[in-house]
Image (cartoon, rainbow, N blue to C red):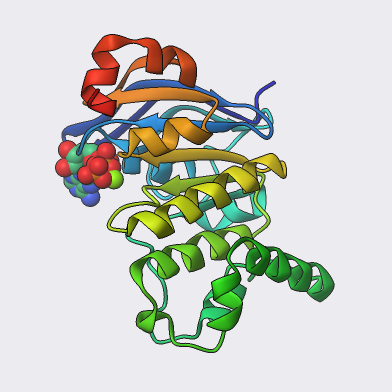
Length: 235
Ligand SMILES: Nc1ncnc2c1ncn2[C@@H]1O[C@H](COP(=O)(O)OP(=O)(O)OP(=O)(O)O)[C@@H](O)[C@H]1O
Ligand SMILES: [Mg+2]
């Protein structure tokens, strides 16, 4: 049984269909990427999995249906979303933003050890712990957003375009950290438009267009496909 099973998922905004019959799986500890152009439905997919949007079709975590679950229970079930555009609390400190990600946790020792883990992944955040989030660079804010999601100790981490608008050097650091999170055993569903960076760290890939999965396979298979290389890798 896969960790996450999505079957024939459909999402509508009013009369407009945003996802049409999307099926995908993420195994325990697997790092899976979703690629696709603007408006393909990538954010909609992550929101639906995190139960932030009503959807139809199968949605199961470790065999258990997520469908009846309201979004505030998704974190407790093991799903943490790091949203598009980061959505930090701009006036709160880095530390406060991070600890808010652990709001459901009750064991202070575990929370403290997860905070150390986040600082280990992103050492700059330790230096900036008392600084107000809005004063960080875009890349540093993205690190806080990923750190905050990790503080929920997810079984499945959903990342929505973590590299958008970030300087190249920080982008490499962020993708290295995502790979490290995956190696440590957290399953990740990574939505990206930067296909080169995503394929470097993902083992499998789904390509979404117009709300449908149009291609799926290993990262190596996708890189070997001339048509997709041209569209997504520009080579
Ligand atoms: N709240 C909403 N109300 C109505 N339509 C929406 C809403 N959110 C998204 N859509 C539409 O649903 C489709 C999918 O949007 P979505 O944001 O999921 O795409 P995306 O792949 O994440 O795009 P991007 O790469 O630009 O972030 C688009 O046509 C979009 O206009
Ligand atoms: Mg999006």
